[in-house]
Image (tube, rainbow, N blue to C red):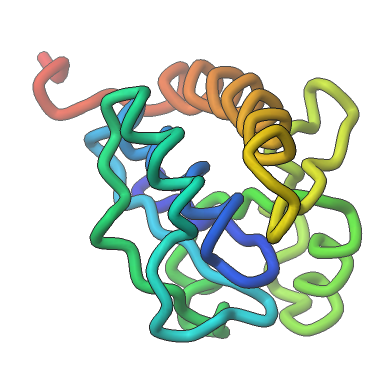
Length: 151
């Protein structure tokens, strides 16, 4: 495994936060994010940046991009925020079946969109994303070995 793609709708709230957490936990992998209806060219939401900065992760350089066939092909694992996004990707790009999962699958939950809903909504969404990211990081580390650990 070499690449993880995180996907939400606008690519300014949930997927950039997920990207930041996964990149921090899996520094040996390429982690990118995109949106199904991306606000192309926009930075991560200010509240998302603030919450991530409090965790020592800087997403201020994030620029929203639209999910594409190329991004999906490059990704070994695609993590979405809800079942609707999974269905959308699988119907748009049938070749992704089997590598698209919800980030909070282990909790059997969707991550609600906090866009324009205030800091409490972002905090709640981030809690689910963090729990899901921890689980995915553990799973990915079991099947990959960072280069510095190779013998």
